[in-house]
Image (cartoon, rainbow, N blue to C red):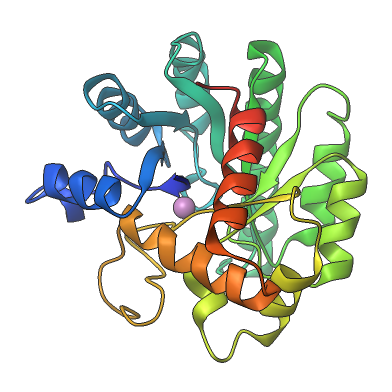
Length: 261
Ligand code: NI
């Protein structure tokens, strides 16, 4: 049994065949899926999916790449959603400095906006007693600094982890976790493969980040929750252990972190 801890099931990519996608997930042993919001509307759709499909749970949040003038109003509206029993986290939230505007003033302003929106959602998570799904890209130090303001009040999973073993250990020391996507199957991903091989078995989860990041041999195509199995198989192979061991450990970690089931 596997849990896809990060799927964008609400995206229109799945409108033609969402029921078949979920059936294929179950057939592959992926019995539970966390559908992750990226804005208020996306979060509402994720929750509707969680209400209507067995084995689907929701995370609600405003993605850093969606942060803008309307975001604080959206975060205020998320508060009502956090009370719902099918909502298991705030996410995905964080900082993304990868595609900032070229104009330095505009870039600085957007970084401030992202930080304000990130902090507001961390405060909401702490108030609601929920953990958080963190997105960081080219923003390691600032993300960690803001997160540390909430130490003891919540824990984070750094999703789509691409860092070194040392970076992962830095997060573990603070009580946080990481999760791996299909990137671990990519030939050019030597750093993250080494991390997936070396870290303790009880510190990570698996995910697809679908519809993105389809693992080999589906690379470049639409990804779906069933592919969580390929991610777990790759990690098991890297570690030289049976798939069942990775499946059991990551499932137990996900249940403990998201506190469902
Ligand atoms: Ni995502």
